[in-house]
Image (cartoon, rainbow, N blue to C red):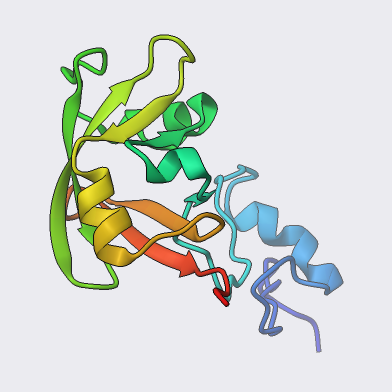
Length: 159
């Protein structure tokens, strides 16, 4: 029997990526031969903690330093446009593990060019959470609630 519909190129494969069948070559026809900039690949887990740091002794004393490139990529774009980082800008930080909200001051360190969380960092996080050298912490921006989420990702074994 002859196919009377010339564009009968519907693929019946269930696939979340590029279809393996030769008919899939015509899928470009259906989307107008455009690249749409999205993927249908299945992602089983996307680590939300984009900002991670293994704590050093200096991070436990008076401030938590973030590398310049990390802060410029993941922290600065979410701040208010008028934030004065030379003097300091208040940033809300939600402790995901203990369900508590805190306010830290984010400043740019003039000498190193790095950025740091100051003021209540030591009391609200280091002391209250019992953070130690080599513990790993993580932050990520909650775009709906407009604050950073914080979590202790890994604690070093203490003997």
